[in-house]
Length: 425
Image 1 (tube, rainbow, N blue to C red):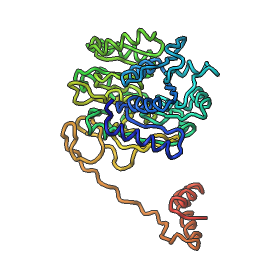
Image 2: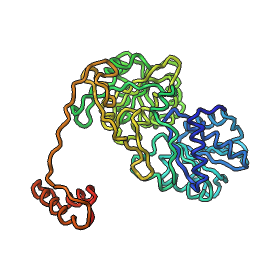
Image 3: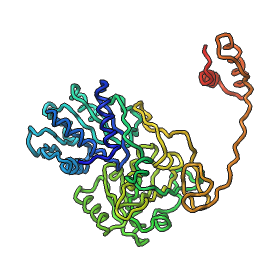
Image 4: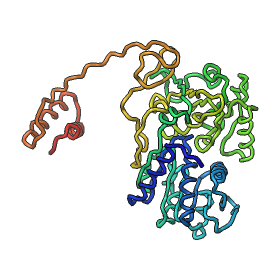
């Protein structure tokens, strides 16, 4: 299998991590970057050294998708453990297993020298942690596009190193992802639980007739959105977790073949779903975490024949907080897994409503010339200047306390300001 340069680079970085003594690196790679391709190369290398591998995923769709990609890469001797099924040779060098199934197996879990966690931002959930604890002598490999859990628990509880394989911006520049055109409501105009426009209106104005995935709040909400879209002449289906897997698969096949133009979903297509032909992402819910937001947007970034760009129609304004998908971000294992790099602010076009990083004076979408934003002059706080030595501490604290009293701030502000300035007690 021919690897892209950034994929080869990621594998080299993972090997360097293990060689440095790390046991459990986490690979961060955007949706569409080929995490399973990288995992397949790592797995083939492990097999060649006589090691056994366990590949874990938490949903049925991810199991079948992972098996297909592993087999396409030449890893064909597989044991597949899912629900009541245990297919393939028990001594196969690679076992692909469902997390919910394996947690019930106890001592029957297959032996492994390398355990690969797909979508590893779920790892610190109790079931994942239970599995990790059973393979304490094995090497671990986590894979995710978004190293951030919704509950804020740190991935560092399981993984001990971060390897960033690439970024959305790099993959877009290389042509492995398509540029994203982003529309959002004007800043500050929406109340909680409000949408700028209806999904049908947004699609009609900016969808350009492309196939769409719509992210909704509840099953009832998804049904209402689908009804509205159908009444507007946009053939739309619904998928959610309460539907049988065969029914979900049938609806998604209709979307793939063009029998449907859109699918409204609830928590089903957020991650692990690959359909490159879909080019429109409509957010009718407001994900609070950057990880969920990026997973949703990632569904439409993959390239496809004739696809020059994708459209993100952010009806609730999440992008105003989380930024465009290509914005540079900082990753960590300490609980706040994804942070924006504070280099550029976000601007919104007053003409078409598009959102983009600050910089150009004209909107990159419609050419509207943006008004110049005056820079606010700094306010004088009156704390004075002191050298950061022990002798100056009393003077510094006295000045800070005077400011706190004048501005009705408490002792907590004095301590925080003192620490930020670099003073010592």
